Image (cartoon, rainbow, N blue to C red; front, side):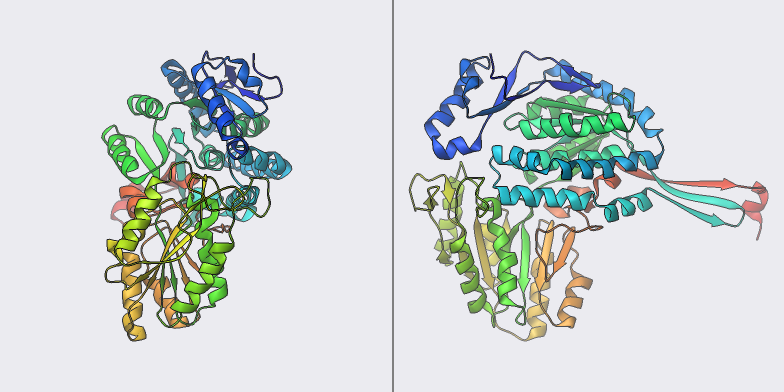
Length: 532
C-alpha cells in the first residue's frame, strides 16, 4: 500500500478519475542530493514493483496512474465529444477562464513552487516560472488575445468579422524539464474553444497532473465546460504520440522537445493531415555593443546558467564588440564563479543537478582543442560547491572564443548545449559599420530562432537590430533575456526552434484558425459583383 499522505492521481478522462493497474512514482529531487544510493534504489524498486512497501518512504512524493492504448484513445474520444459543445460557448465566457487561472495560481503559489521544487527546480527559478505564467495570463495579455480572436468592422451595409475558430482537439506533449509550466499553456488552447488531452511525462508526471487535475479541472467546472474539455493522462511519449497520429479525432499536436525529433514528428503530422505546433530547442544569442553597460549586460548573460542551462530560452552564446570584450568577459566570469549549487529550497541557489554530463565535457574539450580559452568553471561539483569527479552539479563555465569567422565551427556556438556552458565570441576589429553588418549577419544565420538580445545605447545600432533581425520569435533590447512581458509572445521561434511553420507562439492563436465573415443588409448580389 502507498503512504496516505502522498499525492495520488488517476487518469483524468471525460471529467472522471479513471483507474489504471500501472503506476509511476515521483521521488523527491532533494533525495538525490542527500542520499543518492537510496534515491536510485527507491526509483528502481518502484519501477519494478509499483505496489512495493518502499512507496511509504519519506522521499516518495506521489504517484500517477499510467495510460494504455485504450486509455489514450478514450481520452481523445472524450475530447472530441466535448469540443463542439465547448466551442459553442461564447468567447467572453471562455476568456474568463484565463483570469480565474491566474487568480488560482496566485492563491496557490506556495503549492506551485513546492511541486516544482519536488521535481528539482530551485525555488528561485520556480518563482520565476510562476511569474512567467502570470504574465502569459495577465489582464493585458488576455485583452490582446481577445482582440485577436474576434474583431468587427462596419463597411457600408455590411458587418464584417475577422475571427479565429478553434481547431478542435489538441494533444499537448510537455517536456521533462518543465512539465507543469508547459502543460499550463493548454489553458490557452482551451480558451480558444478547443478540447485538450495533456500527456504528463511518464518520468516526471506529478506536477503536470496536479496542475491539470487539482487546479484547471475545477475551474472548467466553474465556468460550465462540458466533461472532456480537459483530459490529463500519464503515458509513454512514443506510444501516446503514435496513438495521436493514428487517431482521426486529433487535430493539432503541441509538441515540446528536441529539434531533430520534433522536425521528424512535424513531417509525420503533416502527412496525416494534422497541425504540428512545435516548441523545440533554442540557441539564443546576446550581442553586446561597445557602448553597453557591461554590468547589466553581464547580469542578463548570466541567465545562461539558471537551471544549469537546462532551459530552452536562456542565452547560449554571446557576441561582443572587441572594445568592451575584456571588461565584459571578466565581469561574466566573476558572476559565473559566484553562482553556486545547493538544495532546491535554498533561495540563493540557481543551479540544478545534471544527471548526464558526458557531452558537456566533450563539448568543452572540443572548444578548447579549437583554441577557446577557459575563463572559469569546467568541473563537476558537489552540493556544497566543492569540485568533485562525482558531483551531480556542473560548474557554470565560460569560454572565450576569438573571431566571428570561425565561431560557427564550434559546436558550443552552433548548437544548443543544454548545459551551463557559455561561449563569448569576440568579434574581429573593424569599423562600426563593418562590425554591425557582421553581428547582424551572424545572428540572422543562426539555424535556431527562439530569442535574441542586444545591449547597446547608440540609437542607430538599436534601430538596425530592430529593423533587420528576422531570426527568432522575440528580440529583447537592454533587458532580461528570459523575462516575460505582457503582450509579447511567451514562446515560439523560427528555424530549428519552430519548424516550417515556426513563428512567435501564442498558443491561443496557434490552436485556432482565421475566418472572415460578412453579414449584409439589403445588398443586391448583382450590384455587389458588377456595380461601381
